[in-house]
Amino acid sequence: MRNTPYFLILGKATERISHLIYTWRKARKNKVSRRKVNPARGMCRIIWAMIQLALIITLFSIPVITIGDVISSVSYTVMKFLKKDDTKIWTTFWAQFKGNFKKTIGLWLATLVETAILVYGVWYWYANLALLSVGKGPAGMTYGSVITSLVISIILLFLFIMFACHIFPLIGNYENDWKGTVKTAWYLARHEALRSLLYAMIVVGIMALLFVFLPVIVMFIAIGFGVVALICTIIHRSIFQHALSQLEEENA
Image 1: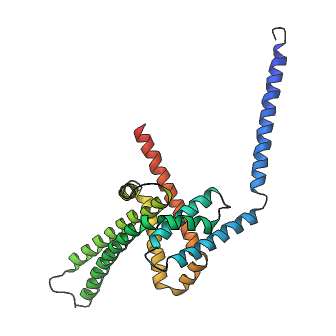
Image 2 (image 1 turned 135 degrees about the vertical axis):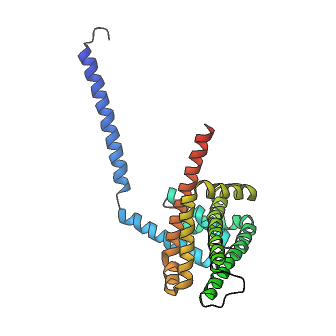
Image 3 (image 1 turned 90 degrees about the horizontal axis):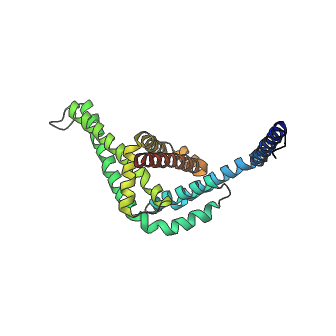
């Protein structure tokens, strides 16, 4: 080694580095090519998964009291599908659905009651505003007080939806008791307000469409619910990951 010319040593090192770069590029190219072997097949898998999810959400939500369990189980299923696109949708969902019912039923009923109260509040003040506009409002009510109450009711409804949207995905994807789940959902709603607001607006928009337009219901049964489940799961995952990274930075 002592008598070896430096240019030979440098040449061998350069050759070795070039070989490593070539090997890395080849492996990367093969990896990419494997991903792009059949893009149509991958797209068909996604569409088929969305159709299955739409059917699952429609069928299993009919009893109403199971909707919380459906949300948590679908969230888990979509999360697993995002990691591995050959996930068996029905099998994965059913395994979660059976195990999550007791965890979700209490929180779902509480969410349903609270949502009904808040929606009634919005409707009540909106109805009074409509009555005032035609001169038939209740005695003692003014435009200012009614509009203020209506705005407050809408804000409270959205804040609750921002909070409630996190509860059931958390149950489906993370082990925790109900108190821990509620605290985590409230933390996410407060610290990830913009993403949570987007989440809530999607949910409210879907519900509004379903109540107003009957053809939309048919479309959602066909595939729409599955697409919405995918979008909401992606949003929830980004919210949780961002919040988790912030917590790690604060604790560092």
